[in-house]
Length: 359
Image 1 (cartoon, rainbow, N blue to C red):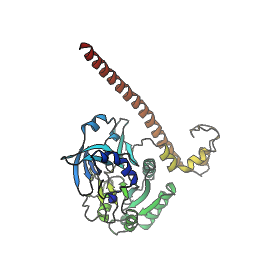
Image 2 (cartoon, rainbow, N blue to C red):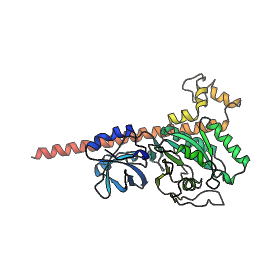
Image 3 (cartoon, rainbow, N blue to C red):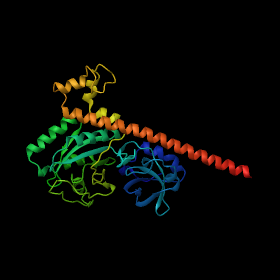
Image 4 (spheres, rainbow, N blue to C red):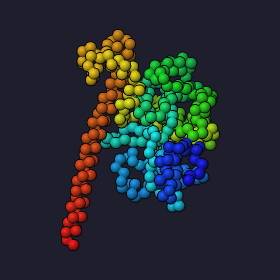
């Protein structure tokens, strides 16, 4: 049986998934750091560098089959480095489309309860990026929290406008304004980050993620940088994903700044992020209305009479079309992968039969 891992979020569901592996002599741990397919696994009493077993590497067909920070894994702890034999089923998974042209999912963090979507108020507030981030988080299964940081660098009017704009597109989501300098909002964050809770913080470079984590956990010592004055864009200071343990008992995963947030499968995320469009669509004449050219479209009518802001409708259409394109590309890539697998299997069968025939 594993030691006391409740501070890492161990619960009855994880323990039930782990039990067959425990009975086979493996040890339970959680991935707390990930950097270019190298891992650090935390056990009840220690941390150890880890690598995946050759079998897992061979059978993994996609990037998401490999461990991600936050994953519960089964390891053989007597080796150095320890070896990861299995990744337990994920309860939630925050992921985006991998950079580049490949139709591949890139995990960001697994088994998380909360995701803080952070934007710094020392620059222009980006409502469209917030909507995109909301879709990703909703699709993950975790609970989103909007975090407006660096409010010490903004006047009251700017904070008010940003908060109103964020609330308009995330009406049912908690919103926290914060400052690592003045301490504003930190108590509200600490209340959410209690023992057993795993949270993740996402946002562009320079939003203040690492600075905020340093304020919440005085011993974190994450590197930070100033933003460029010329364009207010941040420099990448976090190059890995890692779990930080907080004094209140919770854990917070720091992630590199992400300029691109490509959507993956996002049907549920879109529906939850744009609920008013779904409600309007029920009034459209055609059930499969694209809201582009069909007559008696209730969504377009709402845009025309001012009930639905044009920017929000345009954002929805862009994200919907991107998600549909990704779905088509994924289906095509899956077919090609199956064909390759079947072809390689056929070759192997012919090779074995030929070898047997020679005996």
